[in-house]
Each structure stands twice: as C-alpha cells, then as structure tokens.
Length: 78
Image (cartoon, rainbow, N blue to C red; front, side):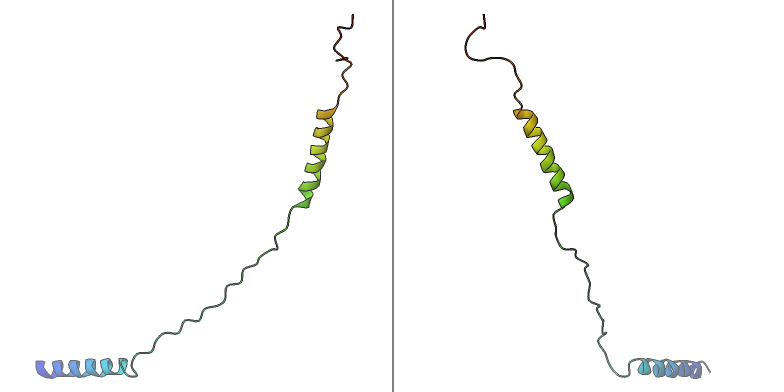
C-alpha cells in the first residue's frame, strides 16, 4: 500500500516536471524604451549683462571724477 502511494506520487511529480521543461529554453526579450532628454539651448542671460555693464560704467565715471580744487602746479599758493 505504501508502495502504490509512493508510485502514484512519483508518477504525478514526473508528469508535472516533464511538462514544465517542454519546449526548451527561450531567452527573455526585454524591450527598452528610448530615453528622451529635454535639452534647452544654451543661452546667455542678457537680463543681467546690460545692468552689469551700466553699473561698471557708473563705477568708472565716479572713479575718474576729478572735482578737486587743489592746484598741483608745484607752488605753495602763498
């Protein structure tokens, strides 16, 4: 009786194992979607360039301002 249960179990296991391997190995196919990169064109920020140039112009004008009343002609002024 134990032998018939064992034979039945072995037969059932053998049937499921052989059907699981039917057809052989098939390599898995992985579909890769292309990566889309949203690139913005390189541009300079003109909104900062113009005020920076104006600021440099004002600084240059203040630095070169010569409103001194001193006469540097080499005399004491007396």
